[in-house]
Image (cartoon, rainbow, N blue to C red; front, side, top):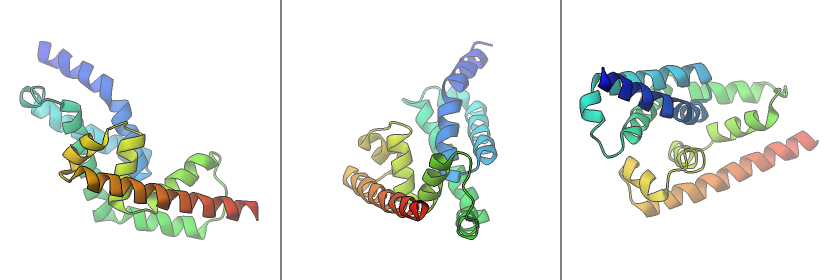
Length: 163
C-alpha cells in the first residue's frame, strides 16, 4: 500500500511537466499523453527498482522521450506535420504557440530535444549530457545551433505575417 501511495505522489508531481515536454516534441497533445502514460506504466511495473534510482523522474522522462522518438520515426509524423503546415496558410487561434511548435518541428531532432529539455524542462547542460550520453560540449553545440535555427524560422514566419 505504501509503495502505491509513493508512486501516486511521484506521478502527480511529474506527469504534467513531462507531458508538456513530450507535447512540445511531438506536437500532438493526445499522443504525448499516451506516451507519457506508457512511460509511467513502465515505471510502475518496475517501481521497486525505479524508486531507488538517484533520479526516477529522469528515468521516466527518458523512457517517454524514447517512446516519442520511436513513434515519430515509425509514423513519419514530423514530415506529415511539416507538409500540412506548408499547405495551409490559415492562422491558428494561438498563433505564437503554433509558430513555436512549427519552428520546433522544423529543426533537427537533437537540437529540438536539447532546446526543449533546457528551456522547457529546465535541465542543466550537464543533466542533458548525462541523459543523452554525450559530452557537455555536444549539448552546448546542439543548443547553440537549435536556438539559431529557431530564431531563423521564427523570423521568417514573422516576416511572412507582416506581408
